[in-house]
Amino acid sequence: MCGIAGLYTKSPGLQDRLGEHLARMLEQLAFRGPDSAGAAFYRAPAPPGSCKVSLCGDEVDWEAIGAELADAFEGASPPRVLATHAVFVVEAEAAEVQAWLAQEHPTLRLMSAGSSIEIFKAAGAPADFIERFAIERLDGSHALGHTRMATESRVTTEHSHPFSTGLDLCLVHNGSLSNHNRLRRRLRSEGIHFQTDNDSEVAAGYLTWRLREGASLEQALEGCLEDLDGFYTFAVGTADGFAVLRDPIACKPAVMAETDEWVAIASEYRAIAVLPGAQNAVTWEPEPGRVYSWGTAPVA
Amino acid sequence: MPAPDATQEALSIDLASDSVRALNQRLHESMEPRRVRVLHPAGMHSIAVGLDAAHEVEIDGHVGYYCAGMNKLATVRVRGNCGVGVAENMMSGRVVVEGSASQSAGATARGGMLVVHGDASARCAISLKGAEVVVRGSVGHMSAFMAQRGSLVVCGDAGDALGDSLYEARLYVRGSVASLGADCIEKELREEHLTQLQELLAKAEIDDVNPAEFRRYGSARTLYNFHVDNLGSY
Image (tube, rainbow over all chains, first blue to last red; front, side, top):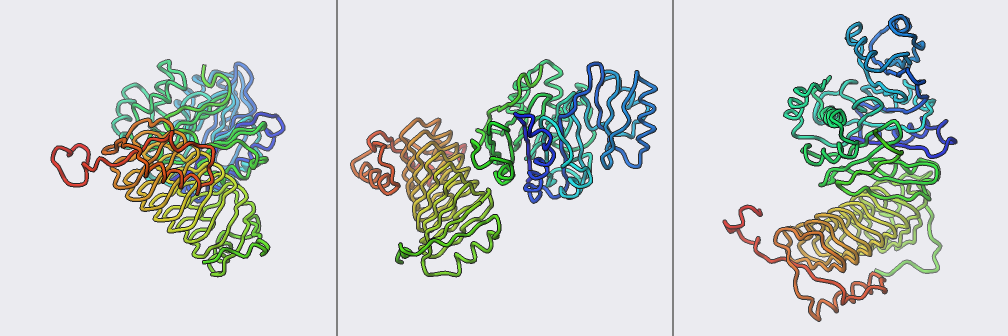
């Protein structure tokens, strides 16, 4: 069992309080996933020609990393530090920054890269995560969150969700995959890099690979129906919105709701009930095997 | 058991301030039938489970999992949607959902009636053991899987694998059936079935649906005993 939450704002009024609303949703899902928690926020896009990276490391001198980044490239912002994570905006392409980090600081873990995405995650109770990362203070256009109850692999920050699936893309998963070992071997031979033995990371890697090969997000998700064996409700964050897919057996729950102000997905309705105007929202259960998406042109 | 006194004022319990456990304890303690109104359910689980008296419970809003599970004698009305397993293992009484129900609605229910005015998703009436389930909308895949006794009436459509490995439950579907499960076949809708349908729809207070428009499905009874030719179906 795990918990998934996603919130997409349709009006600027809600964007200032995005973190507060996502925090309330995650609290409701804490009992579905007491092991660890994480969130992806889409906020404050980097200017053209720059990229944004979220990094995670223990006892890191983030100011020094910022200075090194500024030296190595045209410039870099000072770090915005949240608990064990730091976010930098660097005047360079994401691929260049990723290559530099892998070379110069291989122990730092890259949580996300892109224009607006920021990923934070940590082992431990969701309530602690919300407090340590001050999730309530974050704004943004949309966000995905996850609470984890581990069934397939260890409880660590690296094994937590969301998983980055490419620039400005991420995945959260409720369920378990049974063909992940074989699929991971196949994806490694295609050059996809994995940090853990986690099954959900394989789903993220699968989407990364399909998107790299030119599939649209919808095609990549439909490919999951063929190539992934197991149970899943997926929510995929994109620069402009999010997409949702449930496996055809549909053991894993999902509820969606929409008002004039927002669109939300959650594992259970109780996590939607905490949103403003939820009582009058159009509420439904996404059908098995069907891709739902919000935001224009989710992936170019 | 008599119905609650109609002149009795309904007891209001607000789940914004009271716990679900407190609500359920109030309902369990009183064998005298009561009228109870539940406010702000906010998708909480296990609301009004295990009732064992002819209470009349009205819930104003959407509920979470297992609402009115194991119900006996009581009438529970949900003015909203339900999560997984509404009225699971109901023994008697009546559960009415004004919105839609998530998966496994009426699972293993032995008696009483479940009415869903919206849709019910996957595995509706799974392993049904004698209750009457009437869905005004459509049901999802694997509905009435291994259903043993009772009736499922679907005024809309049914998803894939309807009635897979069915025993003696009666299935009535007015719309399309995406596919029939193993050993489930269409059967003739005879006079006795029309009469039963009329009674079920009347009891569910659905009066704008013509019983003659339904088709009946039941067990071909070929999986009842081991037969080597059926090996692939077991």
